[in-house]
Image 1 (cartoon, helix red, strand yellow):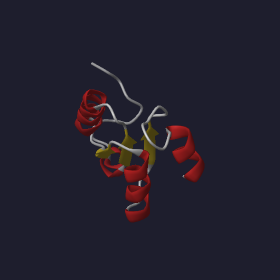
Image 2 (cartoon, one colour):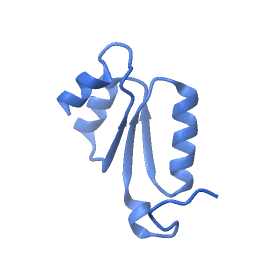
Image 3 (cartoon, rainbow, N blue to C red):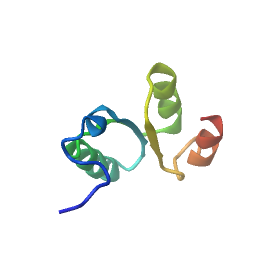
Image 4 (cartoon, one colour):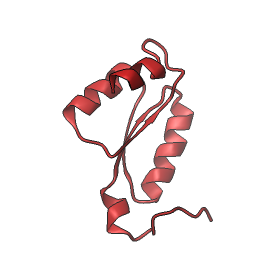
Length: 81
């Protein structure tokens, strides 16, 4: 069993929204499934451009950003964010 810093039944964990910007679908699926299992709300997008669009449309508590993205790099997206 993996331990996290937030209790599984915590209301705080249930309200945290995570945006994951990851172009590898296998990694995105695994991380998304695990975060949702822990009670986080997760939106996953495959490009920096889509991630920036999602950030303009919604509010997130945390961004998980792949640095090696095709097109706009994760480094460039981080500068914009």
